[in-house]
Amino acid sequence: MLKGFGGVLLRIVLLGPPGSGKGTCAKIIEEMYSIPVITTGDMLRQSVSKETALGNVAKTYMDKGELVPDDLVNKLVKERIMESDAKNGFILDGYPRSVRQAESLEQILLEIGKKLDHVINVILEDEKIIIRLSQRRSCPKCGAIYHLENKPPKIVGQCDVCHSNIIQRDDDKESVIKHRLEVYWEKTQPLIDWYEKKYSVKNIRGDIDINYLPIALKKLIEKS
Ligand code: AMP
Image (cartoon, rainbow, N blue to C red; front, side, top):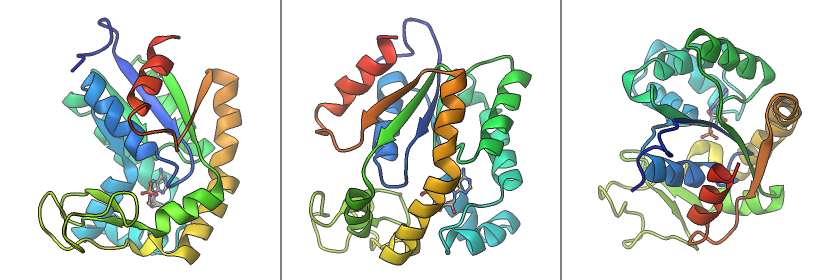
């Protein structure tokens, strides 16, 4: 496993619609460079399952496929970026999702005297995303992800890792997926233009062969 990248530490933002494959890309980058993934969706889902004050508010938005208000998410991310394991870099997965969140991130980076190294945009067409997400099942305990056709669990309905019952997230139901995609195109797509003015945004397809994905990501990160 590579440790860092030639001594340079990496701060990466992963953009792309829900279900495009950002999470898979994030896990591969985490493995290759030993930097933590900060996944706002997972952090929010944890707060929801612990029924914290933030979780209770977030749930009302998440169940409908709406974005949780910027101020709440910005605070959550700021606290997480300040933790010691993120000082050597991080991969942001699912954040920022609005121009206001991107501005807040720039402010956090300014405060800690750092900058982003890469903005990577994971591309996948809506029709493919709908098929992918409606077949997705996840483990509520350990977070492992399955796909009924492409990556089914070994025992039907049971997580391979921790043997809990796997579930379909409420927001992976087809009507909610469609709304999440509408929200993405309205609120998050403008971010790509915003980032293009500041950084060079690099595109990668979210449906390339999983065996080739690590090489493709490494090329993207190291050849620039
Ligand atoms: P995800 O797993 O990234 O698709 O996120 C699931 C849900 O969590 C989204 O539909 C939003 O309701 C909420 N969420 C995750 N990340 C953010 C964010 N950066 N800003 C606002 N809401 C978010």
